[in-house]
Length: 87
Image 1: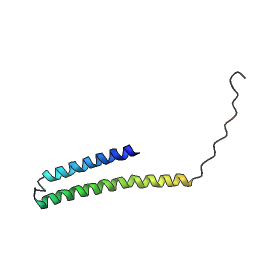
Image 2: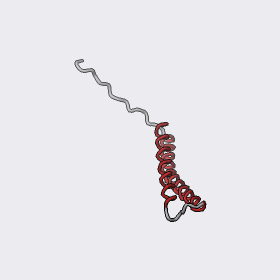
Image 3: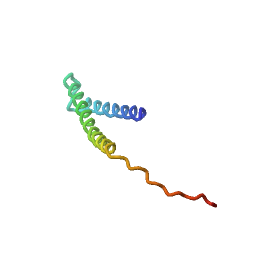
Image 4: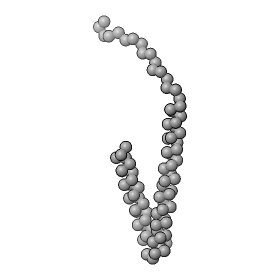
């Protein structure tokens, strides 16, 4: 699990760095203090959107896990006795 968290964090950081870099060089955000603030604002909203998309499957998985824990587990079906070969 730790490896997946580290990998996901690295990929997420790389994606947001690319979003910030593209926002900094776009014509919408010139290299002025206000333009740089606008580029960081764009990266922030992208991170908020990505987080919102990640929350949806998390909620679905949590509900499925909760429902699975509430259901009583079925006892193992009795297996018929098998005679050994050559007996």
